[in-house]
Image (cartoon, rainbow over all chains, first blue to last red; front, side, top):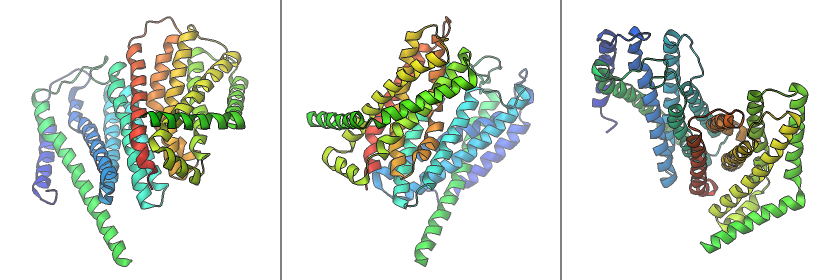
Length: 221
Length: 220
């Protein structure tokens, strides 16, 4: 199914829709936020798709442990990498947004901290993998760490920010954004699937590249 | 099931006996705790409550890395294979989790005692902090036991354990640090119960994951 083209075309159309409707469409006039509310289509979509990629990676790690199929390990690794890229982009877009609305690019908000911790943990995953040279062992131990890290991290970044005060919407000090009306019409059918599909597209390309490189390697041997 | 409990107990007793006979970890970590806290005292004197609390959890973290790192690195490859074949991976990891939890419980008490001696006593509710630091010590030991197993499998030293563990432990340390505010002031803290419940829930999750994932780690 992933070799087909329709979802790549869909991805481009959705992203064009996101950019056109996102920058030109009407948005509710909120105090403080004003026009920056359009960042909703980028910042939140980045985070959302980062979590989707880490969940996909978790699934492939579990599949690897169940089957010992080497390909699943490549899938898990590449989805972690794209998750990190989207995480960094989410952090950057959020930081710019915060600079114009909260008055500082960084303010130790619980969600900002959670994001940085998530990135550190997944960077440690890459370090762990690079510390081993044996392919089998690297795949197995990497998969175990991936599952463990996910289970340690996500409950806390889903629960802690709801328990403490945050500058993010839902907490105090910021007019909460509810995705309704035009924003919901752009975010749910446009921005979120568009960015996620773009990430999947990049990842499938990288996976194919990895598999080709391995084939070539075997050929040389 | 009965056999499994007997295996766990035997492995646990073996660790305990080794400790009692060699007395290497205990005194080694004890010396580490005492000298670290003494250096802190020389550097800072008696800090105020917020600093005291932050330092306590950081020192607890370093103690845990040092105390737990040994648990897998001390076993040679042949000996591990032997344990694996006679007792099974699950019994082995459970006995290690128990032993390290006990060790860290003890070390938390010692470091709390030394903290109050050297760095002053800003605690308003000593008992609740004692309970929280015990809970925290056990939580840290569970996470680092599993990470020590991973690091040992990757044939790396304690350095890798610190690299893997420090990011992973931040959420728990944040929770513990926040929860322990209650011991310093007479404030009504919202969400204390749920924070403690979250820490205990995470501990249960770690034990479950360790039991499920450890056999994969040791398969060769």
